[in-house]
Image 1: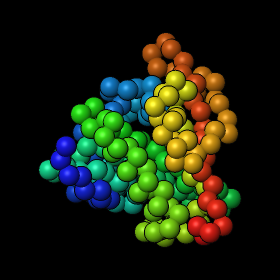
Image 2: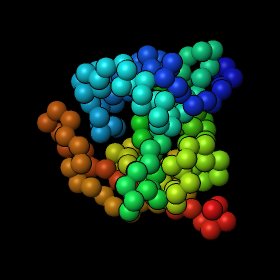
Image 3: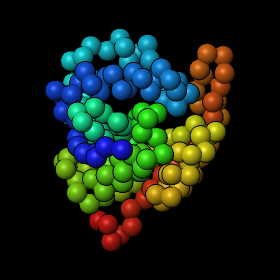
Length: 177
């Protein structure tokens, strides 16, 4: 495998991000709350803005994106202590290589310690949702310290099939603040 560089995506990465995001939504519609059609209808300028003003990390090898993950925070006063990890996707050729773990470890570290975005200073907890039958993802999240706190029955409707989601959280310990 090639060497990987982990870096934050910027507005200039909008086309490459849209490509990998679209791939994930197309190949695994049950794994994401967004749909392929909804994402395709978004103008590229909105994607660029989302990258520039958000926190989306990519694993890059030879200028090609192998995987991505996003971290979002609420601006609302009562919920700005919660960060949401979203959109984790690793291309099939990079699966089982540790890319997902490295991406998650990076956004967890950013949220808990590095805090490169001003809105991260209030974070005390990270949340992630996972399709209830995705055992590999659940195992990874648990290995990184996430614990399940709820199951949302019929959270997603893909075609005519419902999918349950497990809601997981990682609360920061006092020494991380």
